[in-house]
Image 1 (tube, rainbow, N blue to C red):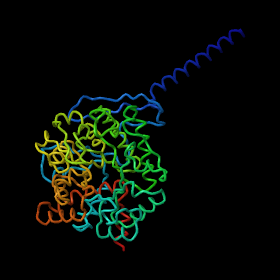
Image 2 (cartoon, one colour):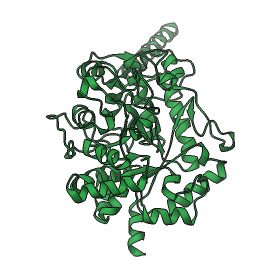
Image 3 (spheres, rainbow, N blue to C red):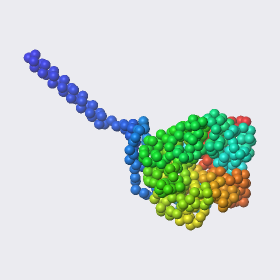
Image 4 (cartoon, rainbow, N blue to C red):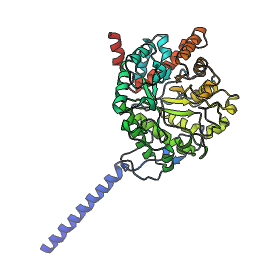
Length: 464
């Protein structure tokens, strides 16, 4: 009898354990499974013009510790779908009614408030992104004192770009940018070319104590999105630590081969790979509170020459650009990229002439603004390049770019002449004040979104 009792107890224990195990198994099946932290989902390239969906399957070397979502979710991420392409327009108002992607309602409201306080002259100055030398008239600027303050009071430009000659050491750069920022009511873009590799103003100066990253071609060879994201975080951290808030990167060009003019600055020759990695780099810089700028639209990968030295062109048709060079731009635009730089390359098989891209309504308005649905800020490449200065005055180049649909002029050959030319164009009716307002509003919206334009600064100016 006692023996039977032991057997019965054992059976009951086994049954209980079996029921518990079954319950645990069912619970595990019904709960959502968390993705392993060293896994990166394949990235949809958002290929343009109904290209087949292609994903990048990276081989990982050093896993990124954390999840990398397909589309980075931050306060800068697009909250509206990009504007759909309408009928092509060739006027300065193309895309004017489009909602700006990646801009919050609060940022739009603050930008509109700031715009309402500005004179026409202040608005026109906001369209220029210049060197400290062209702003102040000094040969080399490494300090910001009374000359910079007086220059910004007279010429409240939208942004200042710095080069190696302006950067001596860490303390000097921090002080220079802090002082310059204190002189501006609206808030300035502090820009620099920090691509990595051969174009690295910070990484090439040990006195700045900035971490450097290698050329983008090496990251393209790895085909590792997590490595690209980490590189973007390194760049953004280095920039913000010194006071910069704007990076003329990433390069979104698809190289045509090893001999392409763009060289190792491009992620590579595979358009879909470039599209995926450009998206990641753009999102990483944005996550680091740095404004990224895609360049050089409509694609420098197959350029026949260097537009720094004189007129250069790309011979591709629009269909060929759509199938390759435009893919990285379209991918990042879909994520709410804030800036796109347009090159001086001519595209005769697209536009029917040799007009530089940044002066072409076909390239700027028909394709970038309307066809690709880009609703944020379009900026020219440096207008000090020979491809512009050999053919146009500073005034002609600035007015031509704005007429084509561009929002900001980078480094005009003569800042005062360019400004005077735009003022004259408004007075003559070639450009309207409404057209100026459209560009300035886009600029201010990006500034508000990235904390460069603040309500506190506007209110403190009113009180003074």
